[in-house]
Length: 385
Ligand code: NAD
Ligand code: GLY
Image (cartoon, rainbow, N blue to C red):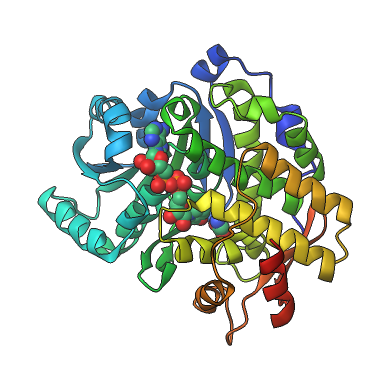
């Protein structure tokens, strides 16, 4: 399967954006999934438009906004007011921040909150936060009363470019990340770039790892544009550049998801860097290495494996390593033993019959799925990292 998105449509063709235009106008990226289609709306200073967008999406009744302690203090008030102004009856659940919150215990607590808040099948959930809140709240929405609608309001860069789009919801088990979940699409996504101004630098940079991923797997001109704009990318306040970057990432993800919603094949390209990335996160202890940092380390591992097995040139491999370093992301995880990492790889979702599967890249902008790396090479690549 090939992607339909032209090589570099969004960031070349979208109108020039200023803070003013991004406030007044939303960039819309459609996710085309038949009757489950929805829009990703991107702007700056636009959280107060949530209620109106929910009404346009035909959402009705009561609503439970789920957020975390870091995000709620900044943005819950605006979101609640916007929903109330649009006529919704709204409750708020504020959870502890961090990866540990994506747990079975929290799911059951949230079911109780849904019942206390009087949510019925005509109600909906709003996920206001990063990928942790989006995955968790989405899973609760997918399973409460066998499924009620939900809305993604991503506030971390990682959530804007990846986790809020495409309907993967879920939680971690003590044995591994994202081992329980459901494919369940939101009714709409609203990404307000101005919320990134309060995101910690480390988390913002971690989101850039997922941005770079899209260039590596599918869009060489986009990758080059990123290489040429390192200083701009490191500035979370540069909403003009971010609008184009987030828009392009969403466009690629929407295209992939429209073709392969349930990861029968093509969608697996989005897992580039994630096989080792998830294992590093697990070995380090959830939250010690954040998701995007794991992806950065895993991407360098996969790039080096691609040199050995898929014909990636050493020069392109070095460009991949260099961009992650320029974005101040980790490219090795010294101190973690291969035996621990290998044990974590064995319980990865992508592992079949004990053999982890990797996305490899024959060149920047092209990717292949389902690759195995011989055991001795896996260990050597890890030890060399
Ligand atoms: P996160 O949700 O933990 O957010 C990172 C930190 O930033 C948290 O402390 C959060 O409270 C804080 N934060 C978020 N937005 C903020 C803001 N605007 N201002 C201040 N603080 C803010 O982590 P994340 O990096 O957003 O997401 C990682 C999670 O997403 C992982 O669990 C990962 O498995 C999942 N994920 C899911 C998918 C998917 O397709 N569903 C894709 C990629 C990652
Ligand atoms: N983040 C990988 C996916 O959505 O498939």
